[in-house]
Structure formats: structure tokens, C-alpha cells
Amino acid sequence: MNIHCLKLALRTTIPVFMGYISCGIAFGLVTVNAGYPWWLSPAMGIMMFAGAGQFLAIQLFATGTPVLVILTTELLLNIRHIVYGLPLINQFNGCGRSKPYLIFALTDETFSILTTTEVPPGVKAEEYYFAVSLLDQIYWVSGSLIGGLAGAIIPFDMTGVDFALTALFAVLTIDQIKKFARERKGGKNAGF
Image (cartoon, rainbow, N blue to C red):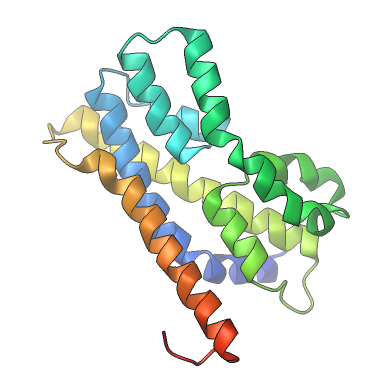
């Protein structure tokens, strides 16, 4: 991946950075508050990378939920990614070696970026998709690491922290509605 592509992806993913850092910190705090070690939150972000699924998993683990119930619940929560994958079949078609990672790293926010932005001129689509996906995962893991470490070092009042992911989804939904309304009015500069 070249630096030019990475810079363009970085610029595109700044809104996700803001959301993922804050929600990742919240996840790290929730993880430690549930009695788990600080390193579990970034480890889950590397191996699982499913924000809502991670929040849910911590709550299910903490309540002693049987593993089969956890797996079924996670499947039901994340089955929406099948629907997400359908519009990306053609986009990911020529992605070769990156395709397995692109499928793994597909989140609500990454889907939103990949379906609403154009690949910048002079940049290979596979590299751009990979850069966006990788940066989004780095943001989440970084936030989770910060939250996990902070939760292990500083005692926090956790009231309302678990609502952070819901707030992120609400903000992203509002952005998508605004974009749709602008496009329906015929111009990107039309107001909402």
C-alpha cells in the first residue's frame, strides 16, 4: 500500500476515528469494569472486531451465559453482515489477497464508507478498501487499548458508558439520512 493511498483513506476515515476511539475507550472501560484484564479489550478488537458483538460478549461472559447461547446470540446480532456483503460483491471481486481481510473487517462504519465514497483517482481499489478497513480496525483497537489501560489504572463511574456505541450508530444513521436527502435533492450542497 502506498503512502498516497493511506493519506486519502486517513482523510476519509476521520469521522470513524472519532467514533471508534471514543467507543473503543468505552469498550475497554466496560471490559475492565466487568472484571476482565485490560488486554482482553484490544485482543478482542484484533481477533473479533465486531463492536456491538464485543460489548454483548462481555455482558454475556460476565453473567455466565452458556457458550452455545453466546455463539447463537452473536450469530444473530452479526448476521446483518451478510446483507452488507451483498452490495460489496462486485467491489471486492478483484481484490485478490485482500478479500479475506476485507470480509473480516467489514463493520457498519466501514460498509458506510465503502459504499458512499468513490475510490480516489490514481489509487487501486483493492489498496483503498484495504487501507480504509485497516485504519478503522486500528482506531477501534487503539481506543480499546486506551480504555482497557485507563480502566485498570483509574477507577471510573461507568454510568452511561455502555451507551456510547448506540450513540455512534445514531450519529452515523443521521449522516446517512442527510447524505441520502442531499442526493435526492440533486446536489451535494443541498441542505437537510
